Length: 493
Length: 95
Image (tube, helix red, strand yellow):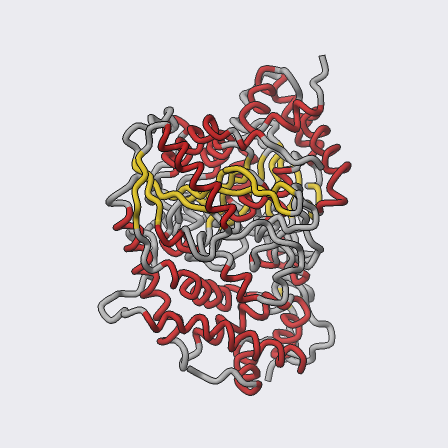
């Protein structure tokens, strides 16, 4: 019997792979169902920049492997979309930037090699804010992406294409990257699950660098179990990334059911109240109370330096960016200004033609913060405040096992509404950036909806753990799924 | 705090190797003054006895055997260059 395409696009990572191993469906059927969903809907939403060349051959190869009785990897036949800043050998990888429009990486990122070794199907590349710089995916050189729940609104960013693709059932999962919230905030805005791993958990080799001390690659999925399945494949030490941890990779055997009784959930005072949309706060408090009703204990905690997280984050992120993006000189790869006569003109003109306004703005900010007159007041100061932010979390975790709060202080906003106010856009990252500064893992999981202008808009619950305790996050997320059930909701496209 | 006037924007743009139009200089000087003003909120925090946090990892230096391994071919490495001359990247003549 042929599986219905609806079963296939709704199935998710774990069930798709299980069905493929059992012979319920083939990789080609899985691929076709998802490509059909993309053909039907992506002209409207703009989640994908391209479909991976050769993906049909890859699906047939996986099916042949199964027919021949050869062993299949744990993600066999699972269609996974890839954010456009993660290199896939020979495929266009543009980081959402006109500068890299024709760039084809000569090697694949470590995470791509691991997904391929697990027999996953890399289905396509997803839209993003140029170089990851943005919270709305409006800063892409290749057009905007729309929120599947409300097409006049942003899917969030910078991994907005990945989040929209997963929410719209165009793929079972996607990889994103999170420098200051770029996995968690779009996951919240699109009503899905997004996990930013601990710093060092996942190799960054082949991730196009923006702010190297902050960013991590992680999964966007429609359930905690699916996120765990992806993390188990992509995590673990890589000799090609000296900042990747030598701890053992995350393992699925760490995911025993969680007894909520006695679990201490910390609610930071600074994550509630002023500046948080009241509908979001009400929904998050309701989720926390339902977890308490199920046996967990709610504890008030303090993260007193939270008001300084945004300035510390943007000083550090833009400073690192100004150094990392110095590589775009118009010579080794990427755009080159044809009219340039001297070497200096090649640099300056290529960069000016290739970079969009937000990238230029951040490079200017970072260059300013690192210049000799400003270094002490901005960059060095931000690094010291970073220490205090990390200490805040360490102190809070003396009193609780996990920290909960909203992922974003605002609902998915109308496209264009924050475009001319970069500071307002930066301030919307207030609840996510501290984790990147401290290197902590965090997830956003679906926690309900707010209704605005008769549209249901998703709300994300953020779950934060101590470094390398992703397992505890995912176990609580699974327990919450059974209580809340919001992960089963999907947008009508 | 340095003043973010047009001259300062031009100085920073030169350091960042970015050419800005007159219009961009105007927009950026206004926006950067506002953003950098917000960054200065950091001055409220007493950090006299606090060390900077540069590295998140507590891992010691990682070493590996210094054995030769395959690397990119010349054609792969030069494949994305706008201009190439045999085994080299091609750039304008430098003086």
